[in-house]
Length: 366
Image (cartoon, rainbow, N blue to C red):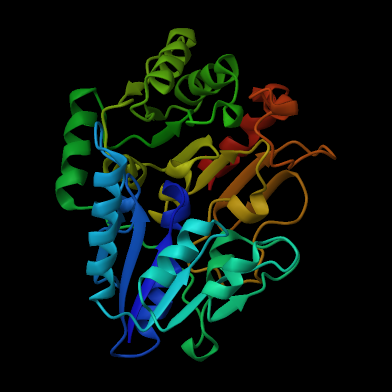
């Protein structure tokens, strides 16, 4: 069976489709799985041992006319249909994924559909509309809900493949910055493209100083290549008394994952590198603000417990080797982009190092 998995979302979302891919591939010996994702996210599935290929949905080029882009999209879907997929699964509620599944020509098309909430045409383009189970459920399990019933028990491990070349480059950069392999390394990623998910610079700098000065670990800092993220990291480093290793903005996604693979612990905010660290098998301590840990917490690979690894409450939550720190406020998680749309989250701004350090110390002690 030829199967197409569609995920038109962000980096972490794409990575969390990996268990769905593995389950589909191993459900029958002749199953062949292809992923279709948007540009900039493909690294999360490239090299996945259970994928035939990763296709990137066309994006409009700089200076490209609308007509030229439309023609290029038509060519893309002609080539997609030529692969003759038997099954297409779109994993998100967005309309573009459903349309892509229909245009793929797959005779069976599955995707989520919420009666009374989603547009009716979504239901018409799907041959099997899957009604999401009510209640709180992790995104990995939401994806696995879309499996056809005959596919058998799900595989729950998130696989992320990092090349030896990327690992070696990271070792070289760390060594040039004074890394001592015999000392524990903590990977700290304090930034997100969405600043309402970030902690205060002062608090983050205080924790980094404590890790180096009092716990005797080395700290490697990373951030995305965006200028705003780089500026935020610069301000955190300016506030630090100690001298962490600065790799900010210099690494690809896979190289960022390689840093986590060398670390004893990952510490950061609710962002894609947190999911990458968990996929690398590195224990995670993550700070959550408006997002729910129940659906976006670091996934405990190979989870064998119930469907919801994080309790439906706030405070310090744990699942497997991972910990999420989140305010126990009645409004948390709100799912908003900051309080009242302000792009600032009070629940993070009123979280203090004294509340975070005991969790980090316990995690490093383990």
